[in-house]
Image (spheres, helix red, strand yellow):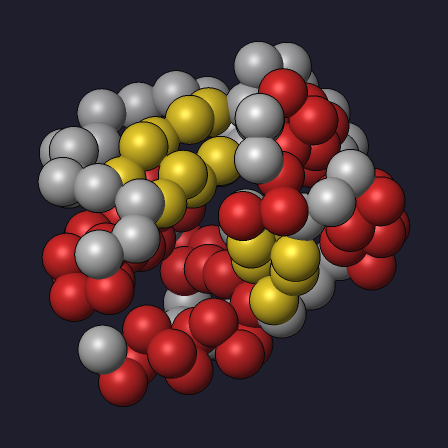
Length: 117
């Protein structure tokens, strides 16, 4: 949600639509960059059309930092966390995943990258 929230375009009025739009953007990024992407959303699961190269995950629990916990778990379970980049503007999450070996990139910086792809 850091990435969606990095652009104040009224996304909060229709969260599922904003999530679908982000997945579409990530699909274009995955296609042009050749990188696979996993996006982890907070909130209730709903239908989002899949995009090649994009894995869509909804947080396994609800409440504050639910998606953050899942993101940290994904990094911890990965056999090569040093090959991962987590996009977040949350300093606590960034610190957690960096201690696990992942790199981080701010949501605003990644948003600008998506807009140039």
